[in-house]
Length: 247
Ligand code: NAP
Image (cartoon, rainbow, N blue to C red):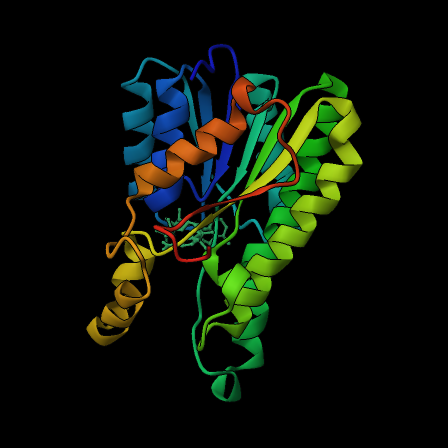
């Protein structure tokens, strides 16, 4: 992949899949801006790893569910890099519980971070991309958004919503040199899945045809493909990276 001269913004780029995406794009020559919610140590470490690949990096603390903070994030990235060619909406959280026990607060928090956050970032970036007449947007959905999952009604709704939003914006921007696609990972070995109980983890593994968790780098390579010029004629698609779970 060659991303020389391109600027990428990866939300939630400090850890897990987002960090792997930052490194994959930087490895192809992109300058990388990332935002994070609060873990400054992880963000700094990712910036160091990106810079070690010979490109520029910038980390901005920003809650993507807050319109004012997203606006500040965009200003900071444009001030630093002048353009945004690639947006990866990766920031996400879980607040799992059975629906009967799920609080309104936990429902709202997950929708705000995972769905509204992607909306706010796409809205801000698409203005810029329209002026550039070039852009690549890749949204992180989930196998859970395709299949549902007991205990994750809020998360599944947010990730199914991301797919609907991806396809809608793909239609709006298709004639302007901007593609919008989604990647739907299965169960990937990150902090998010490390929080699962052993019994839940075993149940998940039993449902993966490839019988293993995926690695963040395996998701990052799919994101980079959709962000690259080889995917110029692909838009509105959902690429599952899930060891066969959603087929
Ligand atoms: P993770 O390890 O928990 O990392 C989450 C990242 O998002 C962190 O950088 C975190 O920042 C950031 N973040 C969280 N809330 C945010 C907010 N409101 N504003 C800005 N940044 C925020 O997660 P992951 O496992 O890598 O998952 C990344 C994405 O892939 C998520 O959208 C997730 O839903 C999706 N996904 C993951 C899996 C999986 O199995 N892991 C499967 C399917 C889909 P801090 O470091 O500051 O906390």
